[in-house]
Amino acid sequence: MTSFLSRRRFLTNGAALLTAGYCRLPWPNITPARLPIPPLVDGSNGEPVNLQIRTGEWSFMPGILTPTLGINQNYLGPTIKTRQNSELNLHYENTLSEGVAIHGHGLHVPGAVDGGPQLEIAPGNRWQPSLSIVQPAATCWYHSHTHNKTGHQVYHGLAGMMIVADDDTDAMELPRRYGIDDLPVIIQDRTFDTQGHLLYSPDEAGQDGWFGETVVINGAIAPVAEVPAGKVRLRLLNGANARFYIVAFADNRTFYKIAGDGGMLAAPVPLTSMEMAPGERCEIIVDLSDGHTAWLLTLFEDDVDDDGEGIISSLQGWSGESKAVTPSLTLKVNSTLAAHTAPLPDKLATIIRPASNEIIRTRDFFLEMEGGNGDSHGGNHAAMDMTINGAVMNMNVINERVKSGVWERWRIRSNLGAHPFHVHGCSFLIEQMEGAAALLDQQGWKDIVVLDDDDWSEIVVRFEHPASERYPYMYHCHILEHEDRGMMGQFTVS
Ligand code: C2O
Ligand code: CU
Ligand code: CU
Image 1 (cartoon, rainbow, N blue to C red):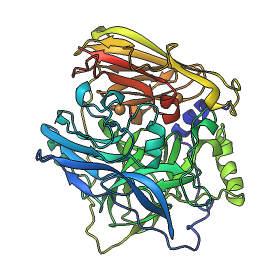
Image 2 (image 1 turned 90 degrees about the vertical axis):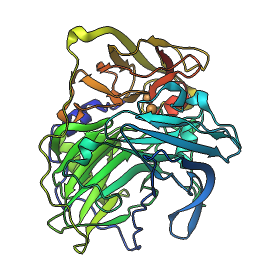
Image 3 (image 1 turned 90 degrees about the horizontal axis):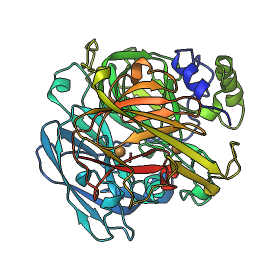
């Protein structure tokens, strides 16, 4: 198969991805949708946040209602706000006719309230976990984690954003007006059948999981957001089942990454493109004070060649073919809105890595895909075994037992393909990604690390909260079709 590796290395070395004019702009002749902004529910005062898991109908395309799932709404859920040193009381009610587990991805909370597959809410039942939020500010999310059904339920809409705030970050000069200059941007891809229903057929997926053909942002196709003529913060979440995106702007403008999965980076990192794996979050600042419209692109890896030359030429070819490069999100300046124009802080956080003598043990994780058609890109997903250290996920087996409060080194690699490896209950630091030092913008707190079949990725991790045998934490590949097929394990922390 074509390896993701060389692409990733190339792209993140800061090469020019695009020059203006290579993509077909703007989105042709239909009136574009406005960017849907999920309602913000502030749970930081400890008041219960009611979350009803329900069926719905959502209009992705004008005039067509698509059957969906959602939380308090037809598709996706509200953005839940919480704060460091507060209690978050979630009151879930499952009105579906199937069980649902909902996990708080990125939260540092004990296994008993983490929402893994052991905590499935039966049809008609409620689940009311109380979460002590101790971690610093971060963009997290919540999503279905139902045993063997995560891919299906997330694809149909069971996901939402979670924003953890804290005093330090609130004291910084950063845009923070939700829905105005601080926008949730949930990136997903969906395929629709001839009736406009969501098509999800993981058994027919290739070995890399289920890819949708059309990018949707907060459930809208190529929407437009009106923003002030100043700095705008985008909280990007790759909420796709399987797709890696390359994020850039059509005019190749520089943007600043300020936060990754687990919170603020040490300092803003200027970038013109970056890759986002499934499950990852990036907060970026884009400056629109010139008044010009900015088009956000979420390119597909398969459409970008391995070598530097190939990227621009493939896009040139691309726009002439059936797949024109369509911006996923248009940011249009409305100069009547009050703008955030203060310079970015040059320091955001202090990130302290453990000294090597503090790391008390090493664990290895080997992700394997076997069988099917072997090692071609067309390998049949349904026929493959997906394992970690030789085992498929078994709810009755605890795969690892970890001690709380101590640093460990976890080394992860695969026999085939790129996988976003995620660990519950913590944020970790990347020591090495695919055999090389972590890139500058990956040197903050993370809960997903990408690994490939050529080299080890290494993280250092420490758990501060308990996870029992009954309610263990999970580690898994965040390609949801891989997770559902067993590329996942359970571990306790005590
Ligand atoms: Cu976002 Cu265990 O997952
Ligand atoms: Cu998680
Ligand atoms: Cu995987």
